[in-house]
Image (cartoon, rainbow, N blue to C red):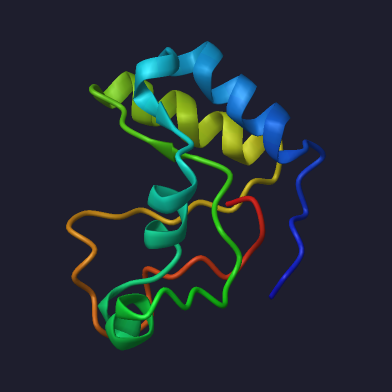
Length: 102
């Protein structure tokens, strides 16, 4: 696992994202974060509840181009790793969270 290079804690990241998007667009449920930490290349581990990598600080659900731009600007300013996801069906490990508090 790679440690986060951000100047913010996970809680501060969530707070900042909620300020940008609103609470409903920032997900922090532990099970959702675990599931978002991997892609389908680890589907067999996931079936058994094994999540060995770091979990993201949050999952965001922006609804506009402006919100996407705001999230990416916030991440850039605070050195937060971003993993863009769609359906989560990648099978080569490219959608996994490798950096803490992504």
